[in-house]
Amino acid sequence: MPAPALRVSICICTFNRSRLLRQTLERVAGASVANDVSLEVVVVDNNSSDGTPRVIEEAARSLPIRSVREMTPGIAAARNAAVRAAGGEIFLWLDDDVLIEQDWIQRYVSAVRAHPGVSLFGGPVRPHFEGTPPSWVLELLPEIGQAYALRDFPEGRVDIDSDHLPYGANFGTRRAIHDQLGFDMALGRVGADGGCLSEESTFFQAAINMGFKGLWMADCPVRHVIPVERQTVRYLRGYYRLAGATPGVVAPGAASLFGRPRWLWREWLQNEVAYLFLRRSGAARWFPHLKRAATAQGALFARRWR
Image (cartoon, rainbow, N blue to C red):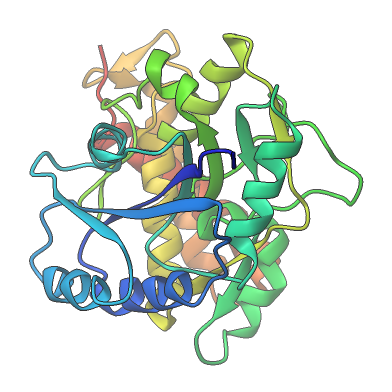
């Protein structure tokens, strides 16, 4: 008697990225799926106002889609909604703007079966620039890769640990983790520009602390689509503002001004001036000041201080 099919849920949370979502779903539709795998694609629409519902409806013609509308804004709320809706034993998580290879699903399935003691999986996230990126973006890419959700480790890495966590654009989990752990709704992006970061890294770290084992899959990459509008200083500034708004990124300090650490005001203003002075010079000179200024600004005006 054949073994029952492995139930796999691909989970994609989306907000107002209908064009990119269509590309992602087309890649999923073209992926290889073995006969002993029962696949569903859970798409959580986090209250989009663009053509996302139509894209999901069109994709359902070629994919076994389970569509969920989550009205509470935020990526953490959307991820939790995906868990509630999914029927799989295995969850494979994708962002709504990534491109997978044809064997991506099967590589995860093979790893899950080969490593029954592992509950957390992750793979590389590599860039796919639309158009020709500015030279300064390529120059700074080793430093700004986090802003584009790029993740990779040297060949030979096997274990996922506290210093080597996957990113949310490409990871897998067993249901056992979600039975004990949810995504913290106080963390993560909200809407187009709000919220903060660390919703996924906090989840991964908590799973490791609870004793779940992780496996890094170097042979299971995805490509993260980076549109032209993200290849800008404005985008980077927005990302580092979110970083500054993330609890724990900035130490509170003792002396305060208007309820914020006094040194943080100085950090913001001094680096903003330095950035403005250096912005027509090489990227290596102005970028550190932009990053520090934006992070301080996010901490000052977007972080919830107690």
